Structure formats: structure tokens, C-alpha cells
Amino acid sequence: MPDAQISQSHQSTSNLAAIALEKQPSLLCEPQEAHVLIVEDDNGSREFPLGGDVYSLGRDPESDIRLFSLFVSRRHATLVRREHEDGSYDYEIVDGNLKGQLSANGILINGQKLQAHTLKNEDEVEFGPGVSAKYLLKRKEQKSGPLDPFDITLINPSWVDEEE
Image: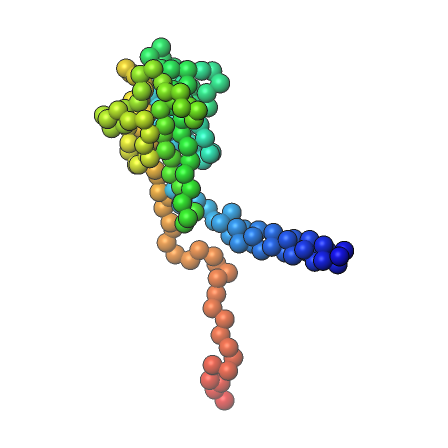
């Protein structure tokens, strides 16, 4: 019996190692896009780089992204990160909080009143008079030319004709 437990323990450890190895390359890869929310309110314009899982937006001082206006609810909206199988992600904006409590005035996305919407590049969100946000998805440019100066092709010596 103890041998079976050791075997199962060893097996789960090796499974964890395999999972860690599978996920490791994605951690090493630099993201090819940057998600940004540009907010305009009574305090002017501010830019917020996005990368986290959830952001609260509202007048509440505890909000992750604070909106300065009396026309905005304390917990006006929530941004939720949605992962895709290919490793990319996007954000969904939800009116109110994640518990289902809606804001007083709602949100307009590109002029339409919606309770939830998956944001796309250059979407405009209105929270109230004079309070808006623009969502930007900035693609990082890939440099042309060699990525690694030590990236070389090895040639088998048998492929090279020797001149005598």
C-alpha cells in the first residue's frame, strides 16, 4: 500500500512538472498587443494600461479606475479579462458590479445602451455627461531582421566538399 501512495505522489509531481513545462513558453513570450483605456472626466484625460483580470470603474475612491464626476455611480462598471485558447485576451465591460447591481445611468458603448459588451479597438464608452473612455488595442511592431545574433544554421561537415 505505501508503495502505491509513493507512486501516485510521484506521478502527480511529474504531471505538475509537465504542466509547468507546457505553460512555461507562454510566460516567456512577450505579449504582441497592449490593452489601454483612456478616460476623460472632470479631472481631464488619463491613460490606464490594462493587463489584470478585473477592474472596477466608478466614483468610489476604492475603484481600480476612478471616475471623477457626480453623474457617475460609485460602482459604475466592471472590466473583466477574457482569455482565448491562443493565449490572447480581450476585455468585457459590464454595467455595474459583478454581483448584478447596475449603475444608475447605465453605459453607452458606441452610442448604444448595453449591459455588457466585449470591447474592440477604438470602442467608446460613455458613463455620463462629460465622462467617457476609449479602449485601444495597440499591436506591438515586430522588428525585421535577425532576432538573435547567435541564431545560426549548423552544417554537417560531411555536406561540405573538401578541396585538396
